[in-house]
Length: 127
Image (cartoon, rainbow, N blue to C red; front, side):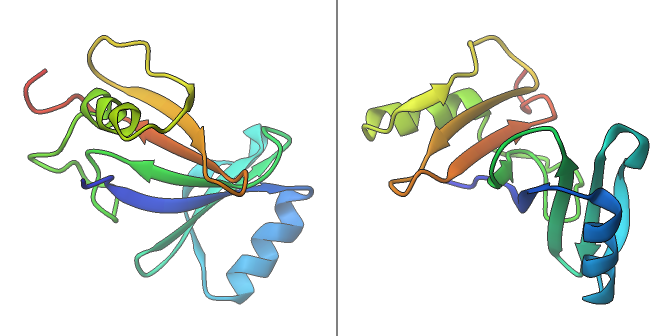
């Protein structure tokens, strides 16, 4: 099952301080809105999202339909197909997609309580 692009979303206390730290490690701004409290940083294929005051805890994030550079993939599994496979495997989905078509997201937790989000921003090829 291809989950798409991977990044980690970090809940930070001070966006400016965190940005400086990760820029010192070689990351550069790739998107976001500091005025709204969030930034996307990239170092090669590694992507980190910094989010101040938006959620508690860090989140492993997968983007079905995107490659690691954020470009749309011509073929991929729609998030609702992935959701059905996860449920069939016995995993508990905390926040479901709600069905439908197009962009959607879901959240589940790994056995250690870490949040895992699948966040599809594009329509599936057959939508």
